Image 1 (cartoon, rainbow, N blue to C red):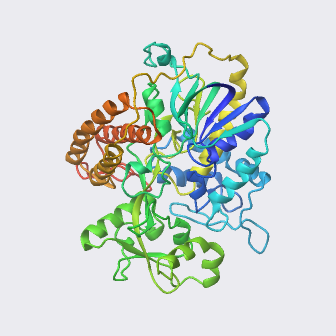
Image 2 (image 1 turned 90 degrees about the vertical axis):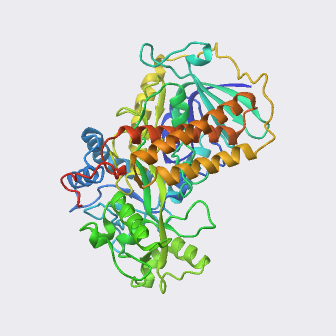
Image 3 (image 1 turned 120 degrees about the vertical axis):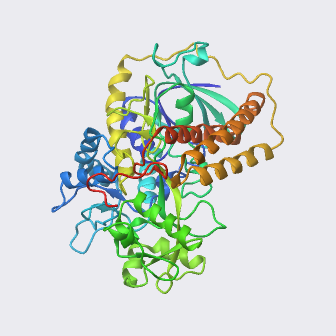
Length: 527
C-alpha cells in the first residue's frame, strides 16, 4: 500500500499536534502514532508550561534561570528565541481552549518550580499535559485536512539509502522522502511518501529500568535519524526526575511533580531528617540534576530504597485543588500524604539531547524536521529547567511550520521509492529473545549509565551492549518486522549513543556526572 501526503507527522504529543494544526491549511497532513492518539509523554506531564506572563518576572530572568540550569551549555541564541516567544505561544494554547488555572483575582495561578527565580509555570491542576493533549487532539480530529493513523509504527524514514545509494550526509546531503510505516493490525508495511516529514516521537526513557516515561518512549525517531546518517547531539544528558513515587510493582513510575516542592513540600530521609542543605542553598528547589544526585548519594549512605517528600504541613485545600491526582494515587497505595510522607526515588525522565536541529527545527536531513523531546535544539544544555519542555515543543513546532510552509512550495514527491522488501523473512516465534534482551539492556543502562557514572562503568556498558546489538541485528535481518523487535533495535541504538557521548565527555557537566572528573562548578550553580 502507498500513500501520498504533503506533510507526514510522526507522533501525537504537543510537538506533533501543534505542528499539524499549523501546516494543515497548506496541504494534506497524515499523523502516524504507534499507539492510541492520546498516548504520549505530553499526556502525562503534570507540572505545567513555563512562560513569562506578569511582572516582576521578565524574559531576562527566565533566560538566566535557563542558562544556569543548563550549566551554561545551553545555546544563548536558542534560549533567547524560546523565552522571548514564550508568551505568544502560550496565548495560542489559551486561544485553542486550554484552561490553565486562575486565582481569585482572575489572573493565571502561576507556580514556581526548581531552578526558577519567579512564579511562571502555568498549570491545570496536576494534569496540565492531559488538558493540553485533549484540547489539541480535539482540534486535530475536527480538521478535514488531517488524517490520524493510530496503532501504526514508523519503521524507517525513507532516504536515498532505499534507492540503493550510500550517502553519508557529508559528501552528499541525505534527503527524506517519507517513511515506511507498519500497520500493526495486519502486519503490512505502508509506504507513505511526503514532501515534508516532522519527527515528534518523544523521548527514550525506557532504555532504563526505572522511568516516568510511558512504554511508547523507546527513542524511535532518534534511532531512525541515526540510521539515516543524520546528526544526533548531546545524548549523554539524560535527566532523572528526583521524585517519582516509590512503588516497585508499578511501571512506568508515577511522577510526583516538582510543583509539589514548589508549593512547600520538603525532601527528607526516612528518619525525617532534611538533607538538601548539604548539597545546595536552594534546598528542595535546586535544579533537577543536583537534587537527583543528592538523593542518589543519600540512598547510598543510608542503604534505603527511597527517600521521602513531606507535604503533611500543606493546607488540605492546596492539596485537593492543585494536586488531586497525586493525592488519589498516593491513597491508592496506602499513603495519605496529609498524614504520611511520600516515598520517592529518582527515575529516568527526559532526554535533553537528540536529533540536532537548527533554530527552525530543521534536521541535518533535508525536508525532515524534528521537534519536542526527540530533538536537540540547544535550549536545555546539560540539564533541562523544569517546565521548559512543553514550551520548547510549542516554540519550535511553530518555527518548523513557518519553514515547512515556505519549503514545500518548491518540493515534489519522489515517485521512484520502492515498497518495503521483506523477502526471506519469517515471523519470530520466540519472543523470549526480545523480552530478555530488553531486560538486559535496561539492567546495563541502570547499573552503569545512570545518575553517577565512571569510565570503567561506561566501558563495561559498551562491551555488554555490543553483544546485544549483534544478536538483535541478526534476529532483525531474518524476522518479519514487528513493533517489539523494532523498539528493541531502537533502544539499543539510543543506548549506544548515550554511552558513546558520555564516554567522550571528559568532564562532569550537568546531568553527566562522572567520578573520574571532579566537578568544577560554573558561576551561578551551587556546589
